[in-house]
Length: 299
Ligand code: PPS
Image (cartoon, rainbow, N blue to C red):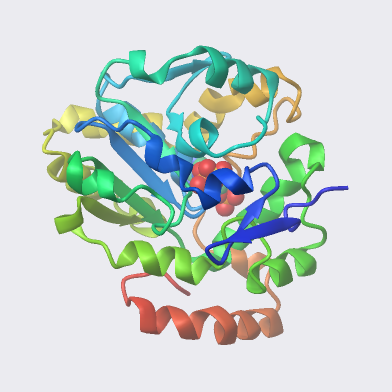
């Protein structure tokens, strides 16, 4: 059985066999036709990507989005440019029949690609703006464990908690090594059209982060807009809203189970890591984080 730890590497990063290795090696994502007002959400998986996308959707009502099953989805860059097969019939239909060039501007795009594989030149040449969301890696790995257990009925399960943790630390999980993914993106700043936000600061003070995003995108929002964002993107509201994802339509996740909105808290790692596991993680990952960038959330 395939697991999320079955991978090949390109540029030192682990990729699931869902990706086409040749396309990755030939940097096929560079062919994506960006437009100057496209906005990209980038992240290491399980860092709050879906939440940030819903925040942007609630901030502005004019995005060019894809209709996927019963929901409206941002464009997934990897699926458009680098996958060898699609995760489901509905998504395959979307990728093969909807021309994303026909979508109105501004388009909302998301990616989990590392900065060394993402077409960063478009940020400069086309003035595309990118928001990178980062999260404490201990919570990221817990979230990954539950996600792969539930997604496609466990087809890519990462095994036990201990095995998942080990695979993450040994860079065998999708898009690891985490420190490098985050570190490469953190080297870019506003001058490169990149804004950094963290899951933790969104949990602590979402209105402040919404203001920061609005300023970065140079699209002001009102007090009412911010209130709407806070209400509609609260964990429970989002869980209900996303219960009609295409993956549910296709029976790939069980009804009532949503691997994209699970607990939605800071510090769930404390319920999973033993003291020994935490110390080991600190030695392998935490030590490196300090030297990469002090703004990276780590606990
Ligand atoms: S993915 O599949 O990589 O796109 O996953 P991603 O969306 O990046 O991350 C999933 C985690 O984000 C949590 N989440 C939220 N937290 C707070 N508020 C809201 N509205 C919200 N929506 C999703 C989700 O529950 C996953 O974290 P865990 O720790 O598993 O709960």
